[in-house]
Length: 536
Image 1 (spheres, rainbow, N blue to C red):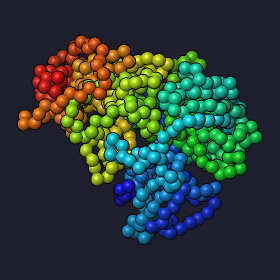
Image 2 (cartoon, rainbow, N blue to C red; image 1 turned 120 degrees about the vertical axis):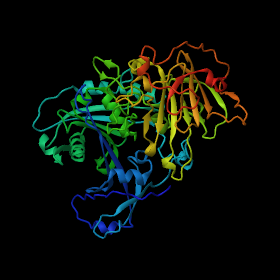
Image 3 (cartoon, one colour; image 1 turned 60 degrees about the horizontal axis):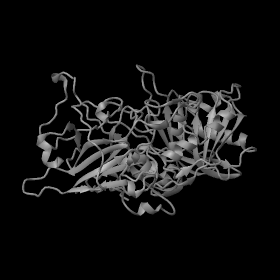
Image 4 (cartoon, one colour; image 1 turned 90 degrees about the vertical axis):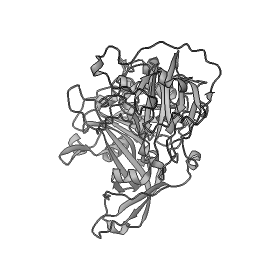
């Protein structure tokens, strides 16, 4: 991998020992990378949104761990989230000042790499995320603070969350993974009383409350040890009977499990989170190593892309009278990170594409599809492969237990940038604060270009389960031949749907400017005579 200079410091926290941080300079330290994402509840309209946070830790063993600077670790790893809950090697270098802590130079996985890590993905990155398949058994541990006797929900409620009926976690993860994983054997246990009162677990950092997640994990597990066989558990959902620090958390934790120090996926949920399947599924997604997605407004809030469970789990979500808010599907890029998009359902359009492709794009909610469900528009190669950008194209339809409350039926575009984070494309100027807007939806009769002009995408027609799209190269120069139309599938039976302009009904003076030539960057437009040569 390319090693990038790191710019921020690393803070080393050692429990029960004091070590000289300067001795780490030019050292290589091995341990388990633990990432923990903290997610606040969606703020009511008109209230200030609390942005999410992330912590990065390097666990070396019982009582010994390092807190890593998240921005520095991100630059050093390339795709930090893909290494969550895995053994890694962290190399350090001196900063130049003898008084300064050493800087993180690189973070790489240790041991056997997944097969696809030997190749680069469509965006030019080394695909470091491990494919996730088979059984992923979770247990829920219900723990109450020593000074709070209330038990908000029964054990039967949390046990039912793991069921295989629509709306339950077993059904959801099987559907969204296209059957790649299941939650067989998952169960709930408790309530258990923690050995300390709530205030002992909630500390203050820079004047703000912060839950001691490791202590909560270890104390809760210890109380349940007599009832739970942890030997084959692959994730632990910790639910509590009171507020933590204003956030639910997901990622990983390490501690004694069956007398052996081990690391596993973990989530921490206060009642407002554990009462809603959507929030719990979001945190479990972090346990599986999935990062947040985002929209394109450039602010610090990554909970504003309702096209992906791993961004906004709260809005445009269906509800169940017992299970609360239900999770919408993961964006196709997130599924692809975990190896859940078969090669036959993914089409990669290379950066130097010269052909026009006619594709039946089926929604990811269609099980056992025989059509394409993800299109990747490759970008220009970069010296640092982790800085390469590409775009994804997917279809979303309002249907089923999880997707029926989406903002609309449309083709959804994401830009995948550094560190593997996906940003929903928004053609409105400025981009909306929440990407459930019309600018985030490409509909029949509309067209869009990648900002570098390499690719254009046109939505030609609607189908019962998706859309027919046409994708082509940058506008050709007069001296070059017209690109050939390549049909990636047999003859299509979809009937085009007549649509008008997206800005119909908006006063002319307030309509966004629409360019008069093909190739207008980062905007969409209805097909016109000027684009006829590339539409045929």
